[in-house]
Amino acid sequence: MARDKKDRVKATDSEFEEKLVSLNRVAKVTKGGRTFSFSAVMVVGDGKGRVGHGLGKARDVSESIKKAVDDAKKNLVKVPLIKGTIPHAQKGKYGAGKVLLRPASDGTGVIAGGAMRAVLESAGVQNVLAKSMGSSNPHNVIKATLDALQKMRSAKEIARQRGLSLDELYEG
Image (cartoon, rainbow, N blue to C red):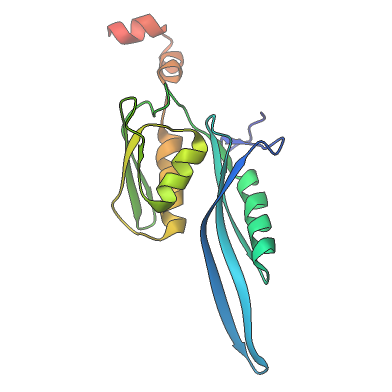
């Protein structure tokens, strides 16, 4: 698992679960009639903390989905998970899309709608409370959700940054 400068994780195999979030048909009117093309938004994840999203456009549905999956595998990010949930509450924002993620106790499940649910399930989150408060545009909701997930820090990361052990971190 190699990382590049934007804390993205590069895909190595095809161990990813793919989810179609939205598929749009776009009509372009020309002199000869209408030309249809498709745009697909896909989310891929391994269920162990790696998730990414992608957009693909083509004249054919299957080709647009394939392009979206390839794009998603290029945009993978690592998400800290603790016992099937997220480490702490976090807000995310992208454009007009705003989301709120809160950890939940075991057995709660993924309480989230549409595009957020696809991202969280692909990342491997099993228990979370989530609310989309801004735009309902799937592109912006996905990017806001990934923004919130990227801001998350595990206790190990915080202890390492402060130069403490985990025991010292919990005492203070």
